[in-house]
Amino acid sequence: MDSLNINILTHGGIKKTSVLLSGGNVSALEPFDGRVDGSRLLIPSFIDMHVHFRDFEQKGKETVGTGSMAALAGGASAVCDMPNTVPPVDDKETYERRRSLFSNDSLCDYLINFCVYDDASLEEARLVDPLFIKVFLEETTGSLILDERKLEELFKLRKPIALHTHLEGMREGIKLSKRYGTHLHICHVSTKEEVEVLARYKDENITCEVTPHHLFLSSDYDVKPPISSERDRRYLWGALGNIVDIVASDHAPHTSEDKERGAYGVSGVETTLPLMYTALNRKNITAEAFCKCMHLNQGALLSRLGRRFGFKAGGRGDFAVLDVGSKALLDPSSFFSKAKHSPFKGMELDARVSETWVRGRPFFVDGKFTEYAKGREIEKDSI
Ligand code: NCD
Ligand code: ZN
Image (cartoon, rainbow, N blue to C red):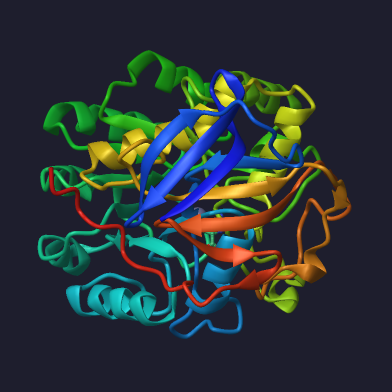
């Protein structure tokens, strides 16, 4: 049994709270009247819903070990791994191999996705139970593009789908989600037009995410989808927490040599939470919108998909503690990720992650991983 008296960020602002943890869960959350350390701020249950931890044959870019250390150092208690690996996670055997790789090597908790891009992988998708079936409808790292005419067959399986797409593919996905009642998650929206279509047609079966690089960056960078225009960027900030459900890093690590050759992707799992906190601290986003897009909506999405996640009385004891008393310049050379480059290099951050807790235990404390740091797959909700 652990107890902490600490400032917690809630949608109504910062609240002094007494947190009681037992058996991996939050057993009680009570208002607290005494003194707390003003430099410590608890951020509930951040899960990075879009990471590429590579491994298999691309260990030079990232391994499950280094990626999961980077996640904990970035304040994420858990991650959701994307399947465009080499080889791709496109059959039951590779899916099970991915699960045992994470079970052996991941320091943080995790969920695994599966990729469908041809007839064989579509058949195999019937045999697995991933969080999402990931579908690419346009070119990016890995070239696993599904012919749009096969999309309907996939939606008929009624397994949750995460879609990397252009505007037309998104329209098609929305139509099919409504026809078959299949959950559709749109990855990394980046334009005003996409958000407008979602605003019009979204229902409880349709969710979407935005990345920090599409929110913060105004100069170009090699990434898919491309960096947004100023008009789009402003629009995305306004849609955060309402039309745009969640922020996810799309952590896409590459070696420095591959980046120099133009590989697409941002090394982002370590910087998402500090960047978003900085936006909150500078009043570019409200506490309400922050809490929605950084943990409440992730919790709601996972609960809809039958997984137990989310910091509340009776819920899992997952959280990060930020040190909000010191400023730092973002320095990718200090990343735990193998991809030690960042388009945010040199940006001033208003906080650093000092602790990350998973299932009621501290996994990461002041730059070090503890004896508890051993990841598990986020289990199916038994209720
Ligand atoms: C991702 C990658 O490298 O795996 N790259 C990227 O630019 N986002 C693939 C993807 O999510 O599109
Ligand atoms: Zn991605």
